[in-house]
Image 1 (tube, rainbow, N blue to C red):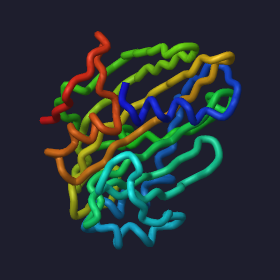
Image 2 (cartoon, helix red, strand yellow; image 1 turned 45 degrees about the vertical axis):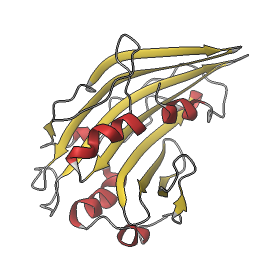
Image 3 (tube, helix red, strand yellow; image 1 turned 90 degrees about the vertical axis):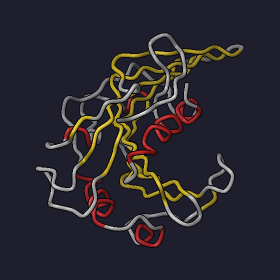
Length: 224
């Protein structure tokens, strides 16, 4: 299981019941930031003045890498956009919309950029549907299932948004995960990995997305 997904399992704060996703999604809260990604050169300075943006910090998980997080909403579902990159510039953004346990109900409207009309699907060996994985370490069991993961291009002339300067390349997914100790805890979230560089999307899926096939084998993701 991807280390970023595995780490997120231990952020669960509440005792829970089984999670389930609403059939209604609301992508509007992240569109202003997505529009900035589509129309501006990707620099830390260009994104630093977005509303509720945190300061630029060193990425504790990766040497010589930096990160900056925008909080879109703090309540249900908690939604953030985190940029990662070198000291010179951001290279990828990870949009997450997340709920925990009993807070995850069918009224929770998650972000789904893949729902925008005009996206163009891309071929990838990391396009998945209904894949699960689990692991046990002493008295702790963790697991996750991906309902789907799909790579695609958001063209600069996409029908559902205004014309823009840049094409974007994305991989979106919908995931449920759990931790079993003395209690059963679960969370559900949607994720979109966004980059202006198609040739790097595969490596960003490996780092931040789902990279385990139906046989439980980690694979090197590529996108074409």
